[in-house]
Figure 1 (cartoon, one colour):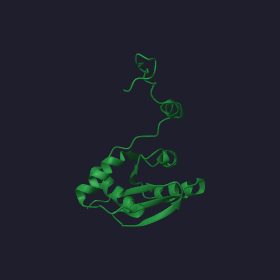
Figure 2: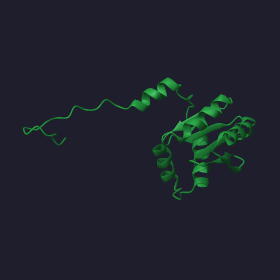
Figure 3: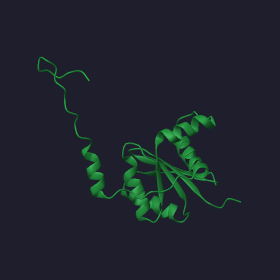
Figure 4: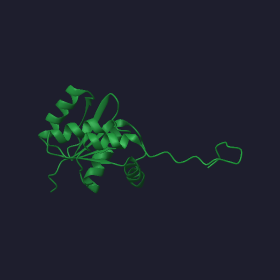
Length: 145
């Protein structure tokens, strides 16, 4: 019997929708400091294998709070989860369904958790890629690339 606990968290700007497997429990938590603290306390008792989607940076604060609380997190590429959902025939799209799907993905695929990047590395990532040199056409204007 599988005694491990798997958690998926769908992260939005204002709330976190959480699904737990195999119990089927789900709940929401506000996405602010007190809500994160409450979430860490509640999940810390379960010691889950946890997955969030790496979507636009919203997951960073959640992942950092969980890691600080001793809960390992795997932030996964959303396209992996979407492909998994399509392959499983799970096409409906709500936050609650996404959280359940992430918990199922955690259980079946067991992605490796990775600690969040340190502040310096995150700052360097924010710089972006060096601009490509702009090719000039014969009239001195920017050429189409």
